[in-house]
Image 1 (cartoon, rainbow, N blue to C red):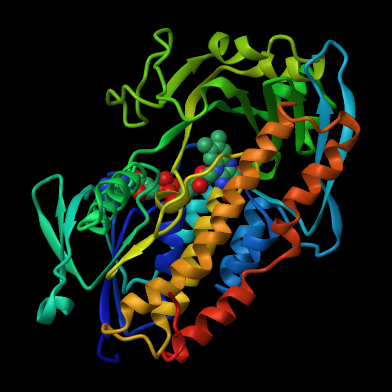
Image 2 (cartoon, rainbow, N blue to C red):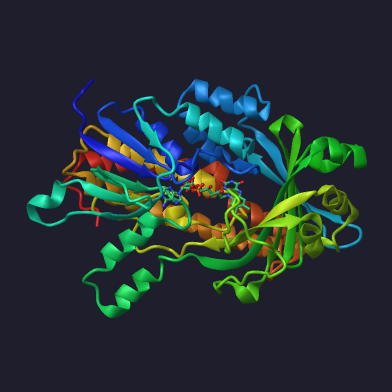
Length: 455
Ligand SMILES: Cc1cc2nc3c(=O)[nH]c(=O)nc-3n(C[C@H](O)[C@H](O)[C@H](O)COP(=O)(O)OP(=O)(O)OC[C@H]3O[C@@H](n4cnc5c(N)ncnc54)[C@H](O)[C@@H]3O)c2cc1C
């Protein structure tokens, strides 16, 4: 084995953290530790869709991983042709009407989250050490003079510590790494700049509440044998609310989510609905954004939707409620030898189903610049700055598009009904008509030619 060039700690083992661990497995001269707060690596039982752009990134991990992912979806191979990705209906009325079909170049791959996560986990190299029940509290990064390369110290909530040369915060929307990094970044700034940077630490409520559940396909079939949710992705659009349904797990389950969009409450503090108990998935009091829903609570905001949607609502047994929060656009996703990926860097609205895809892209890009033979411990800050330069504007643009998509779904714009199809499709085409490869090439060029100024 070659001499390690540096040690990377990945904080958080969600989609972004595990993708980064898999991507770094290709570089034997990098030692990787993953620190995950939960007792085990898990994902809640709901669906996640991966668009062609992000799926092409996953394919770079080789045929084994791709085959396993295809198997999860019951595909022998994917198509690169134009296919129907989702039907869109005006559903907030007694008799719904068709609005448009979203056609995409290549399939939207739809997964059960736990299965998707399981595939990634099975491809993390044995040389990468994973640590569970390690919730990061804070870190310290020595900076000045000779201490520039002194290890970063991680402190966990159980009182233990660890060290690393490079720290990647993949710790989701409430990122502890983001909180520490923005505090570091703001040191020495004038009071206004400082306040602006620190205001990005806490996520803000988007005014959107998500109602999520899985329905047994058998149950839906018994009620309505030919229900569209058993075979195709359908969005029921409505004034200030919408519903999304699609089959997953080889047709065993139907992923069903409802959204309410309160535009007067965008960027306000979320107030807990007293009627809904808040509990996290490990059963501990949470008191915050995620709660368990009874069937009645799930159904209530969507009672006025068409019969087709009502059949789905009648199958709901329980669900989870999510107050959808976002992270404000950050001034930077890196500082020194620390960087953020995924939701820690840019948690966004779910209306283009792209948050996980963006964490996958961040992770692959970051592994490419860090793993490149020209990158040494000395030049890690430059590699991270290149990541920030090429990835941050892109993910910010996706976040803005996701927000707009939600407004279009909820009839909150001036776009007339007959133009919604074109507008939504144009706003989303990046996810199947563009690739990460151009940014990767540019990233490698900037890593290889250190004379190019990247600021
Ligand atoms: C309703 C809804 C539907 C969505 N649908 C889609 C979709 O179809 N397609 C899509 O691409 N995206 C979708 N998303 C977005 C997607 O779920 C997220 O963007 C994605 O999970 C982010 O991955 P991540 O790895 O950055 O963060 P996370 O998945 O949140 O993972 C963070 C990990 O870090 C751990 N952690 C947290 N704090 C600490 C700490 N202090 N120390 C150590 N570990 C820590 C957590 O336990 C967790 O394992 C949806 C989101 C919502 C709300």
